[in-house]
Length: 110
Image (cartoon, rainbow, N blue to C red; front, side, top):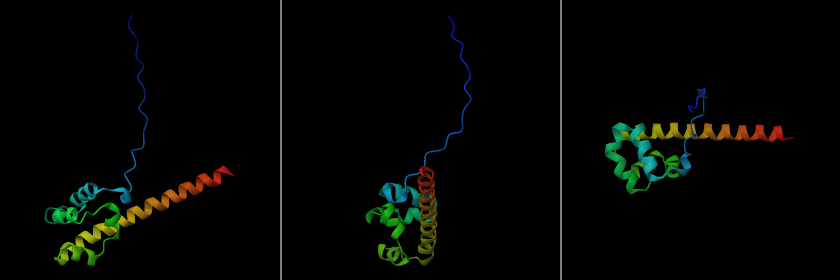
């Protein structure tokens, strides 16, 4: 007996949501550094690892803290800080969207 197979249409599925930055491990932060600060990652990934920069710490970094970590080159600090600020904004936008979604769910319950 031969079974016939019916082709199933592939549905669009949402991609998995990325892990929130505040839950990133040091390894996640190093991956972010390689991806977003590729020119500086070779020089400074050891410093990020030495100082155990997690996602939560990354979001709190300032120009002064980068200097205290040992990143003395002003241009490198500016470039890294620019990417950190972009990441903060992305994180804030995701949190706002979550709050709006929860608010909509709450409003639809009543």
